[in-house]
Every structure is written in structure tokens, then in C-alpha cells.
Image (cartoon, rainbow, N blue to C red):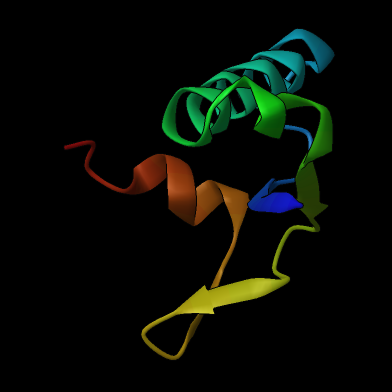
Length: 71
């Protein structure tokens, strides 16, 4: 069984966006491992509550995330 786990800030993705992550990840694994992988690929999209994670020793909040420069 193949497994992918995405951790995202809570309330930042719509249900449609989560579905796209799941579908595209499953498609990618099927492309890499063959179609037999499609039926056993598990994709988990976990929403992390605001302030529930950090970067560089600092608590990351949604407000700070939106302030970060985009690549």
C-alpha cells in the first residue's frame, strides 16, 4: 500500500481542493508504480489547527503564513 500525508493549515483549502490533492496524488503514484497501485493508494489530508506547528522554533499562525513572501 502506498501512502501520502499532507498537513495543511486548517480552513485554508476547500473540499474541492482537497479532492484535487487526493486525485492528483493517486494519479502520480499510479504513473510511477503502475495502475495496480491506484486501488491501494491512501492519501490523507490533515488540517492542523492555527498555532499547532512551528518553523525555526517559532509558532506558525495563519496570519504569519499569509505574511510570508511567496516563491
